[in-house]
Length: 180
Image (tube, rainbow, N blue to C red; front, side, top):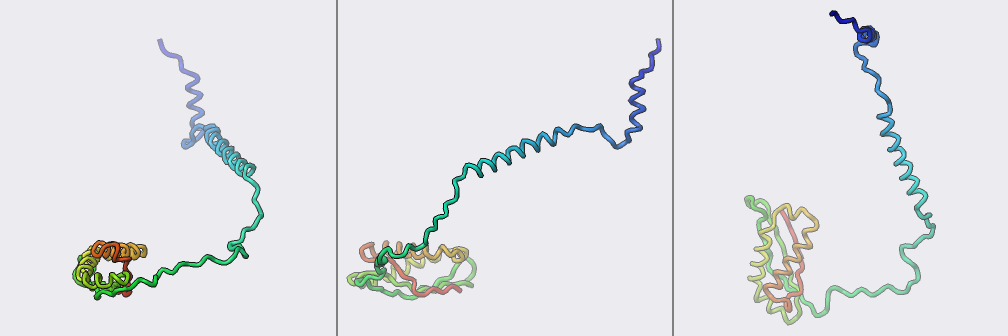
């Protein structure tokens, strides 16, 4: 038996040329709206929550310096009267592992009391050696960091304390610093 022609398939074939070759069936707009509506609701509820639950701004002004609190506290001097400063020989080293194109010239003074002056003078070669050993390990990029200089002074003071003892050395001063 022969099959009967399908009328539904004929209607679809007739409708297809009328719709156009590039058109696709229309999608419902609920996909985009389904994303926009919850997003807008979250945005509005967040704004309302912050706006209505924040405490009102206080209009009291605070002064940076309250006048009339009395005299300022006296600042204790850093330099003490019983301290002496023993200047060491000039330190001159090359910087980095490249050929001797860059060098560092420093003058360092050791802070001590009057009794420790002779101990510093007699241990000067050991101090210079300890300082040179540390300074030779520094790379050029370290000198480019501004926060490096306080750490360098701490390291020099630590080496001074190791050589002289903490009772003799009270720190170091860098009196001249030249990096070329």
